[in-house]
Structure formats: C-alpha cells, structure tokens
Image (cartoon, rainbow, N blue to C red; front, side, top):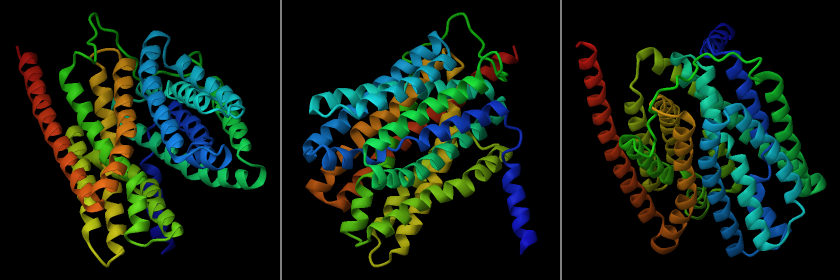
Amino acid sequence: MPVIMFGLFSSYLNTFKGLSKEVWWLALITLVNRAGAMVIPFLSLYLKDDLQFSLSDVGWVMTFFGFGSLAGSWLGGILSDKIGFYKTILLSLVGTGLGFFGLQFITGFWAICLGFFTLIAIADLSRPAFFVALSAYSKPENKTRSLTLIRLAINLGFSAGPAIGGLIIAGIGYYGLFWVDGVTCILAGFILIKTLNPKKAKVTDEEKLIENPLSPYRDKIYLVFLIALALFGVVFVQYFSTVPLFYKEIKGLSELQIGLLLGLNGLVIFLFEMPLIAFAERKGWSQISSVIGGLLLTGISFGFFFINGFNSALILGMIVATLGEMIAFPFGNALALRRAKLGRQGAYMGLYSMSFSLSHIFGHNTGMQLVNRFGYNSTWLFMGLVSLMALLLLVYVKNVLAKEENSTLDLSKI
C-alpha cells in the first residue's frame, strides 16, 4: 500500500513538471491574495449584523459589488494593453490593500455602496492582467496546465480564507478582517516586485504585435463564445446561492453537512484537476469540445436534484458539477488566450473576465427570484434550458472555428 500511495503521489507531482518558475510565483501571489480576501465571504454578515443594514440594503450593496467587478475587468483590460500587465497587477494589489484599510471606517449606506464598488473595481483590474501575464510566462503547450495551477491556488486561497477569517472575527471582530486583507494584498504586491519585476522575470511567450490588431468587439465569434460562457456562468453560480438553500430547505441538511458538501468541490479540484488536464493535453483534447463537455456535465448535475429520498444523489451531483467545472474552465481560459493573439490580449481578456462578472450580477438574483415565485424544481428546469442555449451557441462556435482552421490550412498550401 505505501508503494502504491507513493506511486500515485509521484504521478500527481509529475503533472506540475515543465511549468516556468514565473508561473509558480504568479500562483503564490494568487494564493496569498485570495487567502487574504476574508471580507468577501463574510460581507453579507458584516453588513447585516455589524452595520445593521436591512436585507434589501445588503442586496443593493452586493449589486454595486458586481458592477464594480464589471468595471474593473473592463478597465484592467485597457490598462494591461496601455501600461503592461506588471504595472496593472501592482497597481491593483497595492490599491486594494489601501482600500481595505480605509473601507472599515465607512458606515453610511450610499458610502458603503460607492466604497465597495470602487474597492472591487480596483481589485479586479488585475483579473485580465493575470491572464496576460500567465500567457507571457507559459510555453504554448503549457498554457492550460498553467491556468489550472492558478485555479488550484485560487481554490486553496478561498478554502483557507474563510476559516482564518472566522477565527479573526471571533477573536478581535470584523475590523480585523479589513486590516488582514489590506496587509495580504500589499504583501502580494511586495512578492510581485521581488519576483516578477520585468528586469528579473523571463518572458517565455512574448506577445507579438501585429499591424492591425483585431478589436474583441469586432471579433463576432469571440463575442458569441463569451455570451455562451456568461449563460454557463448563470447556471454555475447557482451552486453558491440557490443550491445551498435547496440543500437546507428541501433536503433538510444541516449547515455542517452543507459545508462538507460544498467543500467536496474544492477537494476534488485540488486532487484531480491537474492530473485530468495533463491527461487531456496528452490526448490532444479539443479546447472548444472540452468546454462543451464541461457545460453539458454541469447542466446534467441539476438532474440529481429531482431524485427523492437519497442524499447520496446530492454527492453524485456535486461530483458531476465539479467534473464539468474542471474541464470547462481551464480549456475556456486557454481558448480565450489563444483567440486573444488576434489582437491586444488585455482587451480580449478584459471582456472574458466581464462575462463572468455579468454572471454574478444576474445569475444569483435570477435564481433567487425564480425560487421565490416558481419553486426549486422549476428553477432547475430553467437552468437546464439556459444550459441548452449555451450548448447550442458553443456548437456554433465550434463549427465556425473548424471552418477558420480549414481555411488557414488551405491558404498554407498555396
């Protein structure tokens, strides 16, 4: 048994081989930054319990939060092209740290709305910049695995953050979260300066400037792809809003059981995503086909909610949804980066990030309203319909991309 375990562990470690040291530094910066984002999971509790906001007021703050993410992703894409990914990430990390320090002293409703809009806008400046940096520091054949490593860092950070945040709240109160979040953001910025300064870091796949870069707003097939991803996001975010309520109200699970079930998602990703992506790359899986397959699995996972009497079906549903996430997101990221080579990467990846910001703005609220008016089963059927719409759009994208590739091959023979 020890020999078998050692062999499995050795195989797991081998899936990380070949990634540049700069990608590992990016992963560490992401881990520190995400682990420090402790205010976010406790935001609704902080607003309701500490500041005595009504549920309606909390909802509006979360809406401003979402629009801040949208604005930051858009502006971050522009800055990445204008001043470069390094300066954009550094500006975002330091600015976010200072923002956390100041936000704890704001208590008025509209001031809080404006404060969180500004804070998240500054924080999400780095989202497209991180994608551009990852592309620069990764060999073309390693991009999907590099993206998977960053996702692994994000998941580890989000797992550790809430646990540490709970201890801080119990020990010194909510204001402690703002100080720790601010310090970790600035610490991540310090690591960036020491490790990825352009004078020190080695660019592996430098962006080649072309004479007439294509604007992502004129790249019609890319826009269709992003619409499909936004619809996919609307379905996926239900696992963080309506699904936990379903677990408690309909299935009768306790908070502990819900936490363990949601934690299964992070555990499966941590253990299996990198080996799965390494296997897929060896087998030459198509990026767009993988996104289609991942979306299909996520849509199918809602079918397990119609099975009565067996809570084990919920575990299977979570595993199926997580498998869909593990396949769709890394290959979706990689496809967006590949497409971005047609123009300016910052603008392309800014739009990519904005598609998921839109999912958060509309997905949570849509699910809640549907549950309130029509019940859970009707909501799951609606999400199945949205999944089908996204699948049809992705199949269209796949066909167009295939025609583009065939056209390129024909031209190369002339």
